[in-house]
Image 1 (cartoon, rainbow, N blue to C red):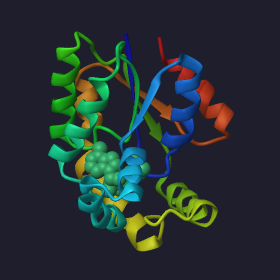
Image 2 (cartoon, rainbow, N blue to C red):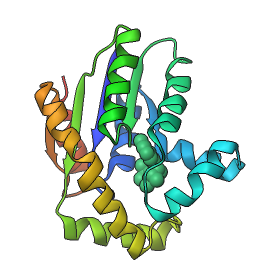
Image 3 (tube, protein in one colour):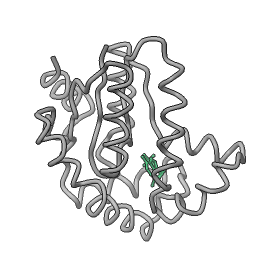
Length: 186
Ligand code: AMP
């Protein structure tokens, strides 16, 4: 049983590092952002409810996110999960604790990728050019930073209080950051 959570502001490298880590440790990567983008593409009810919020850089309501995550985790025979972009609020973190308790699982580590704010904006603007994500424009990026600072950052203290927080310097090459992450995991 292994549950690793990747935390950090938008542009910190959660997606890239999450892919590598999931492959290396044979974890099922669960990215709520990727799942939501899939729903938007498929124009499901959830996708229709989420699209405007995502385009504005606002969070999708907790109940919708928690239902979506629970449906996926319940499908997993063995709990080996890497969480990317979830939880993002205290309510989601509490729902995750309850979900893990139901599976007799606990969090292995919450890895926080630390990157300076100017670096983040530069990375996101570059990603906008490379990938064309509809929420990677400057106005939305600034809102996503604010949303992170106000709603998600409190989780750093939450996980520190649970003694599972591992801070990692997220600046440097993909390989350097990956080595640091691997170094803080059991
Ligand atoms: P991401 O790819 O993780 O940056 O997520 C893209 C967008 O999807 C976010 O800006 C939110 O609008 C939405 N989203 C993803 N994960 C969550 C979550 N755990 N809670 C609420 N909204 C989310």
